[in-house]
Amino acid sequence: MPRPGLPLVHFNDRCCGSVAELRSIILKARRLADHHAQQEQAAAAAKTWLLAQIEKKRAAPAAPTAETTPDELFIPSRLAA
View 1 (cartoon, one colour):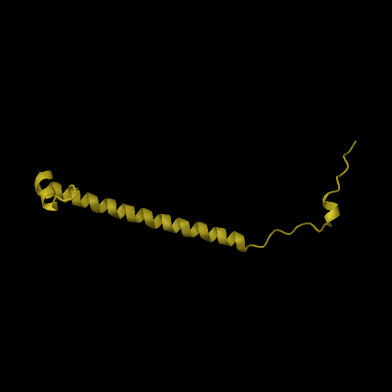
View 2 (cartoon, rainbow, N blue to C red):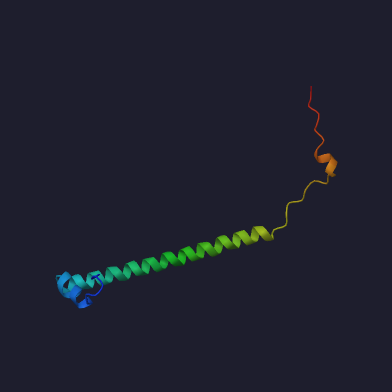
């Protein structure tokens, strides 16, 4: 693209050798813009999925713990001889 302050017509007339070259540049720019939009949509979908997975894990009930009294937690088990 031209420097700021230079009209776009200058780019078209001076930097492109033909109308076909200008058309090619425009089509390439459109493809790049479409590809970028698709990447943004995919990133947004992945973010939404990941946030849903995090929320699902937060909402899941905690795994049940063994029924023990607080004193039983700290009693060392005896090692076999």
